[in-house]
Structure formats: C-alpha cells, structure tokens
Length: 265
Ligand code: 13P
Image 1 (cartoon, protein in one colour):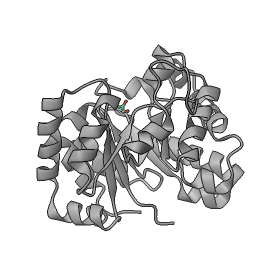
Image 2: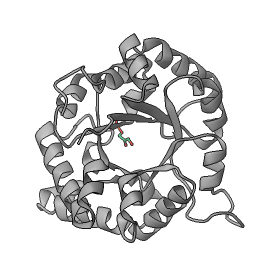
Image 3: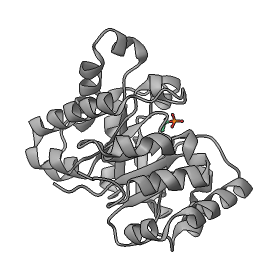
Image 4: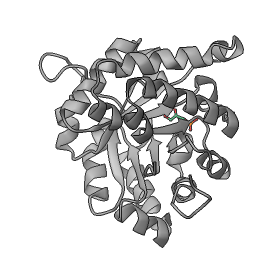
C-alpha cells in the first residue's frame, strides 16, 4: 500500500514570537518547488508541532502553505476544571491537523502512563484530529534485549478499543529514548526492524488498518541520515526535534521524503 510520507518537526519548548516568524519564513523559502507542489497536492505531508502559545502564529503563517501545524500534547479531558491543560477542541480551534501524545519527555517528566496516553488519543480522535502517538524504549530495555516487547506493549495499550477506521487514522512515532537529542540515531536497519514489529502488532487488530498507519522514526534525524531511513519499507517519515529548529536542515529532511526523491516503497 502506498502511504503518504509524513515529516513532522517537534519544536519542544523552544522559540519566541520573533524567532518563530524567522523560522517559519525560512522554512517556506527553503522548500524546493517540487516539495512545495507535492505538499499542496497531498502527495507529501509535513508540518510542525509548536508550543501551544504559538498555535495562532503558526495557523496565521502556515494557513496558505501546504504545511501542517499541531500541538505537542492534549488533555485527556474534554473541558472543565483542569488548570493549565489544553483540550482537543481548543487545538482544533486553531485549525491544527494533528497533535503529539505520549512523547517520552512527557512520559518521564509528567509521569504519563499508557492508559493516560490512550485517553488523550481518544480526545483527539473525537475532534477529528490526527494523533501522533509516540513510543520508544529506554536504553536499559534495548541493552536487555526487551526493546520490542516494551514498544509493543506501549502500542497495544494506546490502541486498545479502537475500531479499524480509528486505528487506520493514527500515526505512530517510534522514538527510542536513547536516540533523542543524543546525536545517536538508530541505524536504518534497527529502526526498520522495530517499525515492522509495530506494524505486525497492529495487524493483529486489523490487517488493512496496519497497512494504512504511518510509522515515523524519531531520534537525532538529520538531513544527512533522512534518505536512508526513508528508503526502508516500514519507515513512512520522521518526527524531528533539534533539526526542525533549523529551516534549511528541516526543509532538506522534508525534501528527502518527497515521492521521487529516492527509491520509495
Ligand atoms: P531529536 O531529533 O532532537 O533527537 O528529537 C527527537 C524527538 O524527540 C522528536 O519528538
């Protein structure tokens, strides 16, 4: 099955109104005409997950571009007395197409559990937003040889109870924790192997949905390594942290995912 390649930047807690303006402008100017056309025709998807206070700025700046914008987290509640939280309907209000859930930095710092991540995902689906569910093992699990079991459990818990259509609309981002912000990307073979395992797990629920789900790789993705990752049959794009703060570097990663840029699956 042909899946539309997807490259998302995660700005994390970086930026300012002024810096974002320059970064978004730089990104729009750096995209090649081929990538721009592919984005506008829906043959390629790319976007940025910005800090919530800048969603309005992203919407204003990107509305007429082919790029997506989204949030980095969302509440597991629809509305009410939850100080500091941001609901899926608020994210939708800013015309976002997607939001991240379950990023390892939130699982670690905010003690997010698999069941909380699953409820957040449900909120996004109820608003018609595309959830990007982040999973990935810590170094100790990889060293013990239990990385696959760890990630499969995260995927299973997040997708429990979804119908086939909901499952097919998900994006999963495999981000091994040891590769995030370390400069130590997983090799394209190791990433492919985990992506194939994730797809097999999804196929237990629905064969057709498993073929539709985009599985992104994240963890020290750079322009220099993107093409070899994207050439793998089960790697459908990337979730990019640090390199998404550099307009030309990020544009180059987006271009590597452009159909025709490489021998695509
Ligand atoms: P880096 O690309 O900086 O390693 O971050 C990856 C990440 O956590 C994206 O969500």
